[in-house]
Length: 141
Image (tube, rainbow, N blue to C red; front, side, top):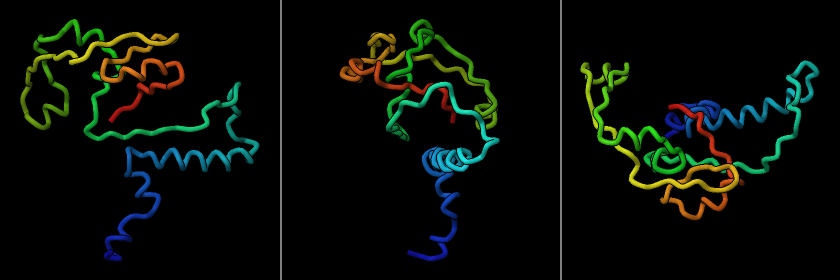
């Protein structure tokens, strides 16, 4: 391997750039160890964390969240309607306001478990395990 190419990024930069900054989580874990020794550190939560393992799935080009676990009632209501896309990114790329049809997910959703999490028909067996899973719906790109 070319040494110049290999030395382009530091290890920290490589971790930061891969998998949407997942390396930042590792850095946070390391910082937590240092903070545990510091008496001025942030106080602990009122309960101990219970997660023993985390499975991080990064699916570039994978199934859309609205086709899998993120039920959006409004998509079913507005299916086929025209919607204006005049956000800053669209305007910057096309320099015009565009209208496109709203499309509902191709699969139906059903509530599962005590938590009532909606899961699409794409994942029929995951429905039996929703009470044991954590669905993070606050990630932005």
